[in-house]
Amino acid sequence: MAKVKTYLSEEAAYPFFNGANVKEQWLNRWTTANPDPNADFPRILTTAAGAHNYNPTSSFWLFSGAYFRVRGITLGYTIPQDVTKRIGLAKLRIYGTANNPFTFMADKRLADYDPESDSGRGGYPGIKTWSIGLSAGF
Image (tube, rainbow, N blue to C red; front, side, top):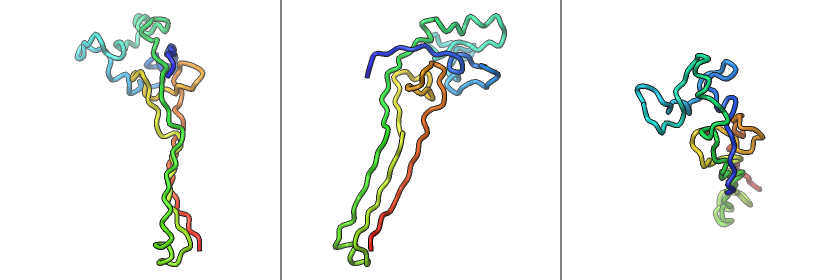
């Protein structure tokens, strides 16, 4: 893992960017009911007076870009021939494949951030696919 730092911006840093709703990660923010000085995000203000809370050049928005990603996993099992012959098959294999199943981020503040994106906006995480299969030979 590299010691890469990046700034969060746009959708990632502003709770109502482009009229969007607040991301789930903002639930652990500073509020009068949750006055935690170590909350993941500052209080949400919808007025212009609150704009200073979301200054993207503050060190608060600088986060670790370190991550660990599993791109693909394939597991399979070939049934032994003495078993497959009993059921009238020459061969039988069962397998499962997962593409992009896991990404572990060093910083928990933005769980849906794609670390391979070219900006701090967050973007959409990579598509995950899971499949299972059966291969039989007669």
